[in-house]
Length: 81
Image (cartoon, rainbow, N blue to C red; front, top):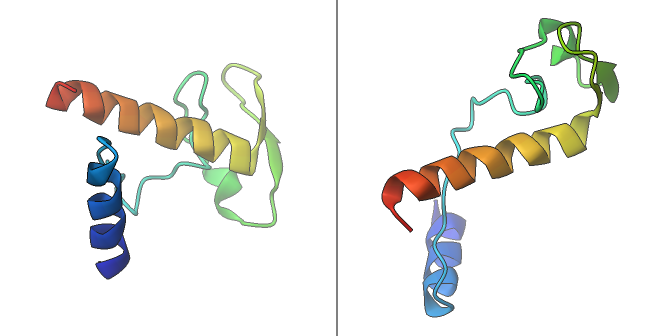
């Protein structure tokens, strides 16, 4: 919690805002193209996977980053920034 407070403080100094994403959001398991949640990717050793619904190929970390960015932007739009 302290790190988040410090980060929020530093961001506000620069005219930015910290947007938090829930820690239980399955960012690496959710297809960033179609939204399908793939239960087979719960195993952390699975580094790349193909979505069985839309066929998109995903790198686990890149896919998670895309999903987290999307959630943050959606939250930002709800706030009206």
